[in-house]
Length: 222
Length: 222
DNA sequence: GAATGTGAACTCCTTCACAGCA
DNA sequence: TGCTGTGAAGGAGTTCACATTC
Image (cartoon, rainbow over all chains, first blue to last red; front, side, top):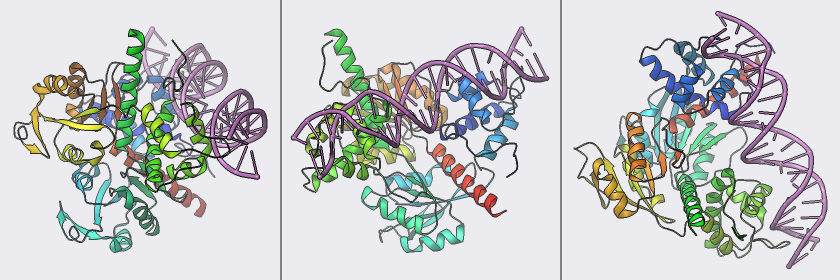
């Protein structure tokens, strides 16, 4: 195994999940024509501390200049490379309810290497419908769609009850990266990465924080 | 300050963010008529280790019986109380694009104490439209809506460019818990809790994992 | 005997302090 | 002098091992 300048291995997950933030902030700076940038400026734009940013970048073999700062264009390229954004990432969404349709129309899929190539549902009333430029397929078509388009990422936008069977169907078809919007946990083998976007949980956490604040206020007052 | 059986203070954030998972799993067990439950069973259903579950519950002053297990109904109440779900949480959504509309139709808001009471947008073409049982209001109406409905949680479903100003408007109106769906970081004073749901970031993290896998495979093969 | 509850060890992440370099 | 890059310290969260209780 040879030494590699930007070994993308052993980068902490916490760091990886912040790289997209840096990328976005960098895009804005680049658009404004900025050609040099301090860690302090970039960190502020991304909503983190400058030490955090520098430590994160150190994991990917840094590209700043001491006493000067960073070149936004260069840094953008380096981060994009680590995230694999130079490749093409075909995406499929299963579940064409309100959320699925909103996601299908979501511009975030169109940018940055992600490309929506298939929409699926198991409801015969929805199958065959045209949503945007795609036609909704039936679930049995999944393996063929995965083969044809090289689908790399599967999005689960079904109700909880169907989430596990959809995850299983994706896994069986060879899709090893899943984004689960259903408010439930899905089990998967270790070779499949599952990330959860859980709106109800976020609301609960917010409620907890407000309740804490209220109790603290009452405690001080009483 | 008196000792309190379930001091909801100093519960780790990580624990709080798992409580909703336990709550969901418990709901299913209760629905099935289960009256006793081991930490192992509940943990499996929630997708965590049993030691993790027991440690989490220990932070809220546990209510299990050694050698026996937990009473789902009792545990549900205790967790719901910690999360403040016995209260009513009026929610407002700003931004009636695809995502905002999907969220407005999202059933998760209806359940568990959350109640959608206001929809807002700054586009005159959208203001006055009826979405579900609500009519879209203009942004200047926000303070009045917050007062009238006691809005506790604000949802930001606008494009990135507007996210900060919407966050500021919520804060100025006294809403101190925000859920931000815009793919950007919003700044807020410490008394305002902001949580981010970032779909693009999740996709990026998944892409990174797949890319890692691919590189590892190539490395082994070559 | 069986399962909970928890101090202690361990791992992971963040922040600090400062060495290194233009 | 100014800002990056990083070892070391500190803090947070998870897992382990086992004492505790029914």
